[in-house]
Length: 367
Image 1 (cartoon, one colour):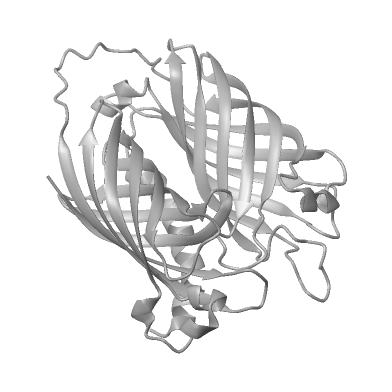
Image 2 (cartoon, rainbow, N blue to C red):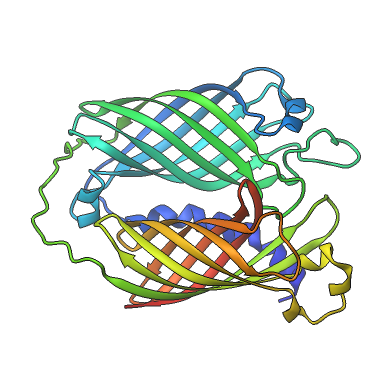
């Protein structure tokens, strides 16, 4: 497969992975699905001064969703007080048809309660999926669209939300932020942020068994240590649009300690090989690719949901042939343990709020 074909396939791989995520998290049938709608009112948050050029009026959004509570028959269901998973389709009108146009996202998500008494709950909704922006940057027709350089993007959701159930009906309210970004796959990539208040209603397609918290009398054994090696691949564009895309490879070796029923701490070594480093130093353009290698160390915190992990890394470069924007790098991602040892990985590497590249990876994990 050529590099061109690989690059064309990446968006399809991302879409397929996110749409399959709810199946990886759970495939249970005991609790019924709920269908509902949310309305939102907010604004495009100009997290950088340059983005004020895109702000016109307040924005209105409409979301359709399907959601399902876990059965409660697995240990992690109890650790997280009866979470739910679902998929949502959001449309937002930013009142800026010339520069932004239609904005849509579809994503699988998790609702993780902090409190849950069976009738009411308060928690956080997390989602990561696929977004669409009708009018990205174009050097001839849309030069003021400096936030997004591609139509197909990643979409990320973070929302604090309250639920109150009345039999098969549930009302909900919250405040959250939706983010559209392509992970520097194509420039510009400052990202679009929609900060909004939300209110919604849903109805279950069958009788719902109220969640009951069961005390966990098992003794927690800590720490349980595991090791992993993950190989990753990504593509990025740097600095300016139309400068060309570069491949990026990574090898991450890590050790993790299970410090609670819900979380792990980890530390590891990162090796990055990035073609984009030659963009910043012309003397590297004709050098062997091995010379475009960086080495770093990172620490990690991860939430564990059965065979799934949502993790957050912070690392520092020990060696780089070309200085980065920051000596510190970050990674937010999702891992799934398939079988006894195989690990599937999807993550975004960044330097604080500036995306570096998306990593799609495959690895091996053992105790």
